[in-house]
Image 1 (cartoon, rainbow, N blue to C red):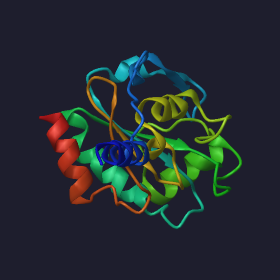
Image 2: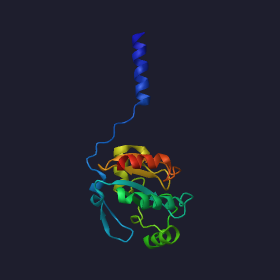
Image 3: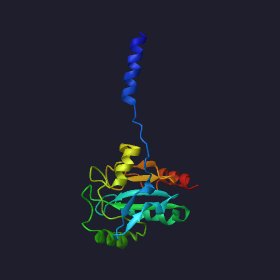
Image 4: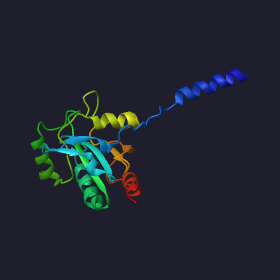
Length: 182
């Protein structure tokens, strides 16, 4: 009977085991990325800040979230929040050039938070930041669609992730941001 119990417990442990991530040989601030204007952004500039990293796209049903992201930026940037958009064509819904993306964001949403150049955000061609997030936080950090959100804490580690359908101004996200900023 004990043997069956041990076997049962072992089977349950195997099925419910979650892999141990978070080796964090690097943190978010150790990376750099090209801005939408072609300049290199050393993410160390954001050290000790909270970062909401969002893969964006111009032709997505979630594109209206740009407005909420801008409002978050306006409300919390003085308290230490960085909203950082990474335009991506990983889901075939982004414009063809950085200039077109920048113009679209400025004209339609008056965006002035930092944006990167257009990058892949999933798979083997993903920007190293997204590979790093996956390696350290698991599959929940991999964007399943546009406007996936990765919340980075002041230590430069992934704090939480939010699916595309979670609105940037949802209580869930705002509570997490405010908790990290305080």
